Length: 175
Ligand code: HEC
Image 1 (cartoon, rainbow, N blue to C red):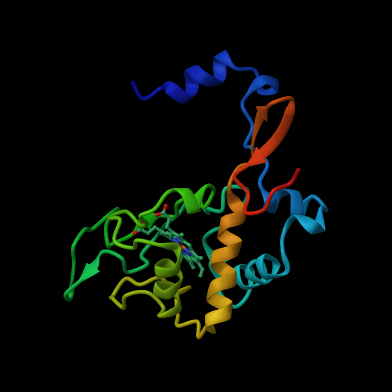
Image 2: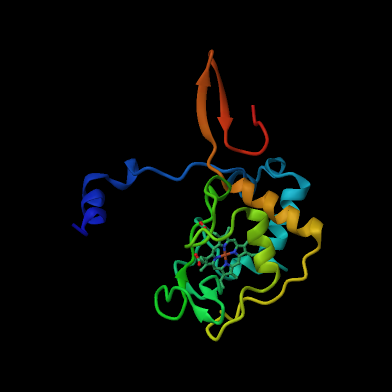
């Protein structure tokens, strides 16, 4: 118990450890500029810039692995769930995010559009709110492009059918 990681590391040499599947986004950052549409690229720029998402969602898994209070647990003037202490929760990965609704630790946001609206308002104000959150003043088009970008973080699973192979999971067919 509690030593699964240690055991798995001992059993799988690094060379045969499973690696994360490619995503449209990973193809893009490796130089395949056509992997993302213009709208998705605009969403990526917003994710890294005006949206400030990278303050917490960074690295290959889009998480800084740290705890933050984003105000989700703050209800009716009190903390509905203390999380790790003062309403803080670990930044989750954004890989496969458009396949894993509903969102947040309590499933309180049904869609990615709701998530972007939530951040646009700067999160529920409360005494422990993370300093990186503030109203974003995104336009409707900017909100849509962030949602489109989040759809590019799905792994491209290769499937075979009738002698041809397809990548599934991106928002556009690759083959
Ligand atoms: C201050 C750090 C921080 C910033 C900035 C931030 N996030 Fe988050 N994000 C978190 C944390 C922490 C959670 C988990 C909160 C919870 O479950 O209560 C989360 C949850 C999410 C989720 C839901 C994940 C799931 O599996 O339920 C999505 C989607 C998301 N963030 C996208 C974004 C986007 C898009 C932006 C920018 C507009 C952004 N985040 C900015 C820290 C942050």
